[in-house]
Image (cartoon, rainbow, N blue to C red; front, side, top):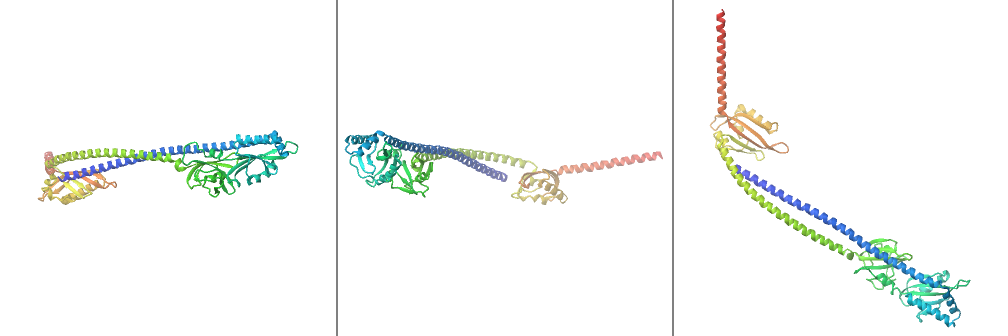
Length: 511
């Protein structure tokens, strides 16, 4: 019974170990699945993010390039139109007639008609003809305010160079508006080649230029294009802004603010940049110069808007991964529970079979004359079978369950030899042992015992953990062997005496 309980306990421990191992296996499987899914999701997201960012950057670059090319074309077109007027010899003749003879009504009418045509067809908001002294001689419309100081300051240079000049964005001190002006010198076709007059073609940027800059090809809540010019140690904004009114020629940012895309553009940087815009908001932008001009284009959009689809995709991936992991975890848990139920069922069946086996084994041990012993060195306990105690005349409860019990029963003449043989086996010098010795019975008699045993388990250091063996009573066999030995000796004596007698008789006859 005790053996069955110990075996049952060991089986229970084994079952618990197996169950624990299975839990570890399922836990490791889940962790591995988590790592695989996580790495796969990460790789997918990083790949998607890289392509998405590349697409955003490509879109910004395309818009920036489109705006820069459009502004460059716009400047070339205005210069080309001004050059046509500048090189028109017939118009120069009319201007000279008009200036030399104010009463020449026909010449004045033709000059005015040309100015009106320019104003109407080329989208100038104001056209005027200035004489060599800077006085307005003709204008469209007919009544105009005085010339702005920015124009007056540029006239001497135009008269000296006799070249078409663009007065870049300026804020008029007359009407407070932002304008650009093409100054077209009209040169006398004679030998003097002197500048007769200057035609002032004023451009209102709100009519075409600002709408063109502000126009964004796709719907967006934060995207805009900025036109920048370096002005001393500042980046000066030339156009009206989406999120700040009256910014043109009024908003400037010091070049020391290197994290601002407008400053990066003014400092000559080209390409995709990230930074903080004039609102203090993180943006991604394409910065580049406008060919043939002092202008720079910044096509920018808030990073929060630009990467919103990326964040949405991230949450979708997180949700899918979470649902997948929950499903996988539930599946693994269900599988573990089914296996655990099967393991418990197998354990119950094994315990029942073990009980039957132990019962049959106990009956077999009780029926056999041999004595079985099982030594557990870890617990220092020894289990003796009923036959072991019966062999020596003891009850099973009368033998202490310790390994040293049999040592106290050894015959003094056999003790040293028996312990030596056992020690060799315990040390690993022999796999097993088979020896004979005498043990004292309960009544004090001595019985010859044949002992066979083997060390069943050792630890990593080679120390024995369990020793199993059996004792068999061979007293009758030893007694028979002694009787046979005595008889053999007696027979040998008789044979020897007979031989001696025959030898004596033979000697007497000879005499």
